[in-house]
Image: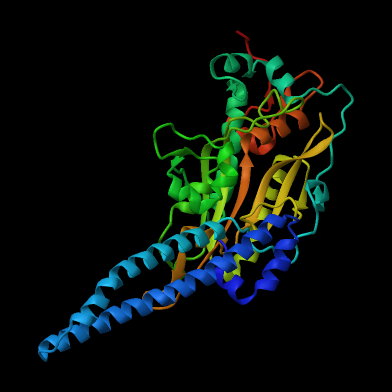
Length: 429
């Protein structure tokens, strides 16, 4: 949620920052907020004065009656005030509701290091890590590999659930769990508390996390209930302290959450249409930090290092890009994407995002920090994908495929797979 004080006190700076996002509609929202906020403050002032006048008139009536004087004229005036007060209260509430609605849709201010650009083609590459593997045989896609090995079934999942779902079988299912266990253990050893969050959230909590007007079209709503299936563990991790004040001595709070995730978006025609890269249901290990405002940029880099270390350990080549102004979402002040090398496509594909949301998300959720009896302030929130296993599976299957159709299991995952070194064909049904 945007800070109204910035619009009141630094309007031109706010507009200059928002102009970098190349979305004129945001400037229109700011102008409307300024207008509605001025109306709200004026009516709020009038309301307070009217209530003060009512109190003074009531005292005057009491005094006149006490002195035995005629209070008829004053009482007639007093009769008009409740209706006027009620109308002003209604106006004030409507204006406040509109202002809050607008503030929820104005995006966060961008950090000065966010590159200027129109879309994802103008994201800035920061570095590449790992050597791209060379193959002396014809490469197969992850879906082809998995089906030939008998470790995935896309046709039977489509039969019973429709497009965008899958059966993982045997060693591929074990590989999925191995990636989860490996990444969770790495982060727990680094001081992160492991959490398995609820898989559903109510609307009021979800609106605190993100702009549902923008995100709701990809989410699953439970019919007849005030619940949504979560799109990522980030959302319940963020909302868990909604409307709370956290003792600042407890900060930072670092969490690693694992959950299944649910989204309506699915792969388009071509390479993503069949397989596990983009599906309605997937597994993800998420990092989340609540911290003091002055510490958030250091933690942004810490989160990035964590996710990079996972892919370095797995031996998967990747690159890191700084997301440009035209591609970044409304909640983040700055975002890095980690993109893993996909040999079959001969390109890097996004496998995780690292966002510093500064105080924007905390304001929406009303999460503060401070000491009892002292001043309270909004804290900062950060989130980063440790690993989305479906995308990591694609990277492992394609980068570690062998000419005989088997898959070499990355060494750090072998302890979670009974010491196996390769994935070999299983009996097909």
